Picture (spheres, rainbow, N blue to C red):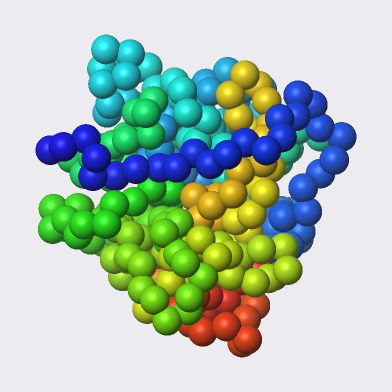
Length: 308
């Protein structure tokens, strides 16, 4: 397969913070902290992040990394080196699971664990075969005490449908894994135009668009009939390379808010029928979402995610 099937756009870094004295308000916007006690901050829930890798020794992330695998040619294709050279995967991972140590930023589910599956190389490119292999790895992975992956985040996409990819996604969902993907950043701000990115567009996946702090759909956020929810996606502060913290913008940032939310919701559900977890999580998100009635559903789906 050609190396241009899937891309991530790391986005322009506006500011770099070495240390933070401010706390991002995005956790409060989605009411995550309000359920931290009853969910124990998502402890033990495993989220597979299919992205550009991670800074493995970042102080806000290292203790939550449970494993990883490199599916790219970076580092001579060594499978046990899943370092991030873009910053994209490190940023996405921080939104999900940066530890709450009152230094830097905290993720939505700060006690969840990250399985880092590197499918995007240092140039921001990947292909469907890597993504498919990454998904299969996540489905089959067994960790300590027989732990399995419960949530998969894919802040990436390509414009072509892929039957093999769709097949693997259906398998993952049938095993009870909650799949979350970015809607894509090809939007033009026109609510009537349609922009589609896969795997987000597949119905088995929770497709997440972006809104601004003013709860207006981001101009760049793809619009289509399968948008499920929107999350914060503009100037999002999270972990980055060199132990830094940066603000990035994109649907890539909105998706991990939903993946982190799923990691918390799973602790509330505590289902005895794990294969139904995706439906239970979706129902919880649907019940609690804030409707954005001023905008069409192909821009905002069922609304802005809330956890309470």
